[in-house]
Length: 279
Image 1 (tube, rainbow, N blue to C red):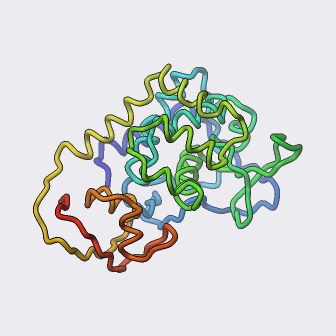
Image 2: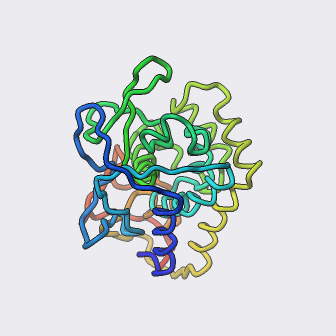
């Protein structure tokens, strides 16, 4: 859960410079959420429990971004929330958002709030629109608000096996993340890693990674425990978050418990062979 002050900031991001318009339906007109949510009053809380997503009011929120610095100011905190929830460096998320959306001013971003160029793919149940990319008239996901695009970007990377190796990298290693995204096939542009790294270093986006890491570990309490531990998976847990908690790698967790993919379930018992645990 985030503090009241942080939620006010999120609401500010939601409404800053935006003018709600009536929903425009594209494609099959299906209404869907990019992230699994549960209703809690006027907002919807994401499954990771870290911060509430805005309620889908059925209205398309149009953002008018005038500069790169305004884009960073608008979405940096959201990228940090996603880093806390999924382990993707905030610098990488911001750099991808800047590059893929033309800092929010690209045609695709304006008409779909899709800031990461994520295509429909099989099984997508949300809204969509067609846009010329590698081929003419390709299907892209459409969101009522960019925050859903940021959440879907996290889920997209976390739930696909070809990106799994990235989550074993240190959370502040943006250079290897940038190269790994190209290696895993996120983009066809040969200079994709260099473009991300240039954006990160030019605009000092790595400072947002350091801020998340500092807050996560400043108050860390380490205590001795036995050589073999049993951890029961709770709501919001991921293999990455558990690995950080026990100071082990995701690969070790999977090997100790015979896990082949990246899916775990609430109530599942995991063996942890470690001498330390963070409370």
